[in-house]
Image (tube, rainbow, N blue to C red):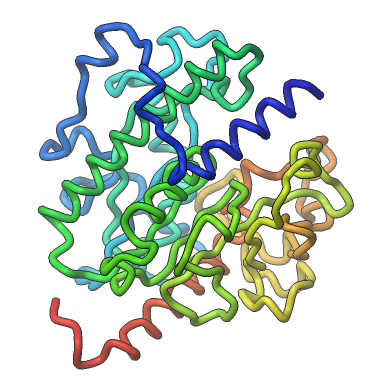
Length: 352
C-alpha cells in the first residue's frame, strides 16, 4: 500500500508539472546516456516519421481503407514505457540505441497504437530517453528524486523533438497530440507548455492523452472533449474491469478527465460492447468486434470483462495495456470525424 501511495504522489507531482521546478532535480546518469543526445534532424531518432517506413504505416487487413498519400494533419505521438526491465540495467533512463528496447517500442506501441491515426495524419513519434518503469514505483526518497530526474530528462527530449518538428515539419498544419502511459505523462506537460492559452491551440484538432489521470484544473483554456466532433480539446481514459478500483485512484484528490471511447459524448456514458465496432488484440491483422463496452465511472473507464476467445486466461482487472487496443476502430473513426470537423470550421482559413 505504501508503494502505491508513493507512486500516486509521484503521478500528482508530474501532473502538476507546470507548477514544478524540475531543474532542481539534478539528473544522475552514466556518461553514455547523457552523451547520446538525440539529434532529431536524423531519422534514426524517430520511431515513426513520414520519411521512413515504420510500423505506424500498417493497417489491419480487416479494415477496408488505405493510408492516404496526401494528408493535411500531423500526429505527434508519444509512446508508453518500453524500458520494462525492473533491474534497470541502464540505470533510470533508457539509452536511445538499445535495439531490444527500440524493437519492442516499434512493434508494440507504434504498431498497435500509433497506427490508429495513419488514415488521418502524418505520424511523428520521437525516440526519447524514457524513464524505467520503476520510476513510477519509487520506494525511498532517493528513488523519488532519481525518478523525477529521469522523467525530466525524458521530457526534455520530447520537448526538443516537438520544437524541431514545429520548426522543420509542421508549416502551420493542424496537429493531433496522441500518447499512452509514460507518453501521456509527457504530453500532459507538453499540452500545458505549448497549447494551453497559447496561439498553437488554434492548430489543435484534439489530444488523445490515454492511460494517465488528468486533473482538468491543470489547464486554463484546454478542456475535456464533450462531443464526438469537438476540436481543440482533450480525450482521456484509463480502463479497468467493471467494479474494480485501483488503490491509487482512491487517493486522487481530483476527478480525472474521462472520455467514453465508444460514444465520445459526456452525456452518453454507458455503452455496451455490442456497439464497439472493433478491437485489435493479439493478431494485428484481425479486428474483433463487440469485445469491450465502456462505462464512465468517477474518473476512470470501466468495461465488463472483455469478450473474446481465451479471455478466461486474463486474470488482471487493470486493462491499462489495452487502453487503445480495446477501442481501436472507434478511435480511428473518431479521429477522422474530428479532423473533418476541424476543416469544416477552418474552411477558407487554412493553407497547406
